[in-house]
Length: 339
Image 1 (spheres, helix red, strand yellow):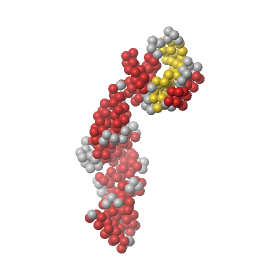
Image 2 (spheres, rainbow, N blue to C red):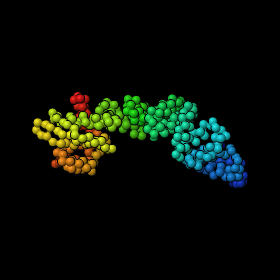
Image 3 (cartoon, one colour):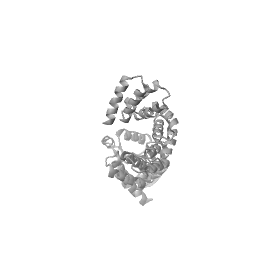
């Protein structure tokens, strides 16, 4: 109520003296203190037009522009304000965030790293630094940032949840699933509907229990290809399998093999998709075309997800096997037994 009265009072004063520095500045400050940043900005700017060397205007104007997400406009005023009070943590954080949003990530990172230990802005700064490191795929440094953020006391719930979520994601990116799972469980106890945490928890719990499925879905390409070679050799029981060609692609890996059994011998092409979604008819048609063009006798298409109904209808009567996740998991279980 007091702040509302102050705004009304300053508004009257500014209306009576529109060209007066104090009237514009104090009206802007009254608006600023009620978080009416959009309305405060023109008051501060007018005050600076009247008195260009009024250093006290730079900080609230810079913060107002930052809060209103006009990051590029905020930077010069924040810089001027920091020249006067270089240790002001609020200004430093706003400066770093504005830099980050305008393409100066390296400079922003230095400030965020400096602020990580601050009792008020440390958790937010650690989160911001970690996000920058994550974008650069420097997950080990991102983990350190997020862990520092989580050491702070009285962290706002939204910041706390985001720190845990990002930390779990960085652990998963490094295939440290066992370290990421407890963080997702912590988030679930606070907010069971936070982002895609329920789906992530289900996915990574399954991966944690099945090392071969983990390799199939998230391991490096070399390990994935090695696993695909093993799946190729066990797909036809009691057969002699000779791998002739391995072709890793961006979206799948393809293996051509010579298969000899007591009843038949032929060339078979295997295609392995890592997706957990639905693979459609167009992809299966493309694979069938490859099988025909290579004069192979058969094709086997495997996915960690499913095939669409149209894809399944397409292979009716054609020499293509479609292997979905449940059957793939059974094959993955046999890999360790055979090898």
